[in-house]
Length: 318
Image (cartoon, rainbow, N blue to C red):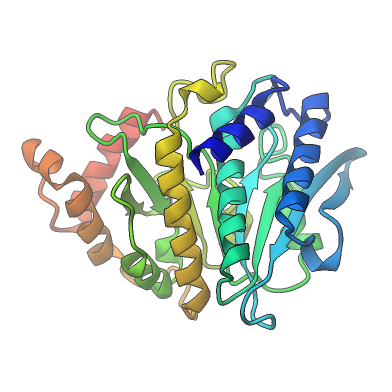
């Protein structure tokens, strides 16, 4: 898997930019289509992979595919990663790494289907100046292109690097567990590879950061996976050789497990209507217990989580 992850990231970053409307943007879309065709993943809704749209005279294209599931009638899970970049930069971590992981998980789900169908969504126009606008690919998909309810989106952004917090390079943050009580059960059941430490936390600490936004504001359960920002965020130095491909392979394995567990878990709400503190504390103690203790920070209450979250946010520059 690691070599395929390297190959996908290198190909997607090779043009030097995937800025909307650029040649590299078109080349990335073509590469995604070719990879999906080689894998044998059908297009979403029985159509092709390209789902074009236009906003304010500007053309955009979402790339959508669908992996069959055991229950064809059940609403699908969605794996999402945007494919554009913020300006003229190679975007290896932002967001070629997530696209490569999505392709890897899609291949595994083809070989052994989950309980539900799984949409592989490579969204356009996530980056500024389109972020949170009607042109944003995930917004347009939700409001105009989806043909059914989505059981739960699992969105990835910035998942290729070592997390820039001392002693926590292997961390993977998850927000959105608070959106449905069933997602706490998903995260507790999902087997975590030894190569990563999962740290579930509240979205309100950081605010909406990626394509899950449109699902959250429409009160749909969601999960967001990220290694947070780092020194090469939105920079020309975001290049493939800086990524941790071993960590990416572990994230792919974990994402596959999360998808399978989400597919069998009823998500019946209430939306953001339960206390996720006990589960957050459980994972924090496992992930950062010794570090927190060394700094005299107990992990016993929501107030303790608030304090350690502020430390993380300060270190990440959020």
